[in-house]
Image (cartoon, rainbow, N blue to C red; front, side, top):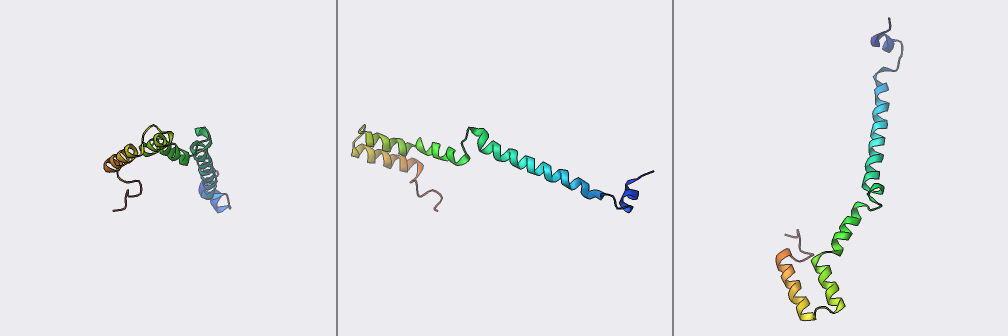
Length: 96
């Protein structure tokens, strides 16, 4: 009769045999996580989402309207001051 204790005494694989499947499971989970965050999102990595949000920020839209000539300089600065009043200056967040 072969028991675990007898196999260990004979120089069998021992409990370390359980270590290798755990390592492979960690590798597979890591690869799947990386693929989900990059390739499987349509090629957009997480840092691209921040860039997309910045393109639609109120100050960016306001700057585009000013550059296109939809609003004049006085209107631009008035609206910038209102946005800074409500949302804070872009460089001042978390500075306090």
